[in-house]
Image (cartoon, rainbow, N blue to C red):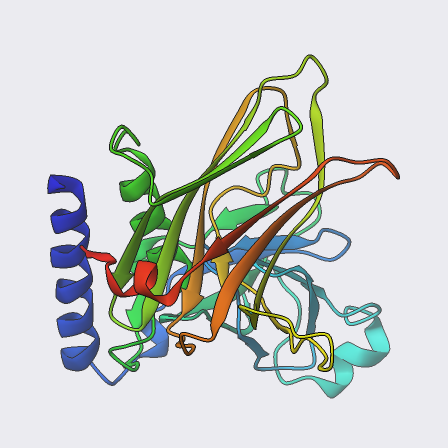
Length: 288
């Protein structure tokens, strides 16, 4: 568990930094990014982007993916007509505007500098580096996707060699809940799926829900679907084994209900396996 302890210390240090970060950012100190017309600049964030601000109408952009901002010079922004309306002409080395990217736990700002199309060294994509990030103060009980991923990686690096909390077997499939972990307001389910048949398994869905433990004929079953806020591995196909970590915000349910997990195969005659988890299993969760 040394790696888990290291992650906690790292998160604590990050939180402390977030609360004591320098509140000012001076334009002259901002890192510079080269940009030119006809070439998109892709800014890759280590966590989902929440917000992007472009300080002038000389720049435009969008979010083609949750962690990628695509920025470019506005079409026709460098025409002679437009240049007459602008206080700063588009000459190589001149600033075009300020690009601000806000993630789940940081804000990063860059000064966009115009480069002539003849410059073959113009940057086309960058990864936002830690030195460009200013931490944002956030709720102590809220983790970014990057932090959840690190916690999940720390869990999966430990071999699932202890007795599983729960196991289910059906149609040459085995579903097991290796362990349950709790970190602040988050619950981590460490799960393994095993296929002992010669047919590989194409996963259509893994569904989580809270359902009545006993279903009476005269009543309808009340089912509440639950969606993980994060999962480590998006893999949909496995031949023998698949181990994954599913993360939920803290939840509770009475003893009259169970958490139901259903593994469903893609094909019409697909193999399905179900597992019921009692609330007592959640209450016995390990802490980091």
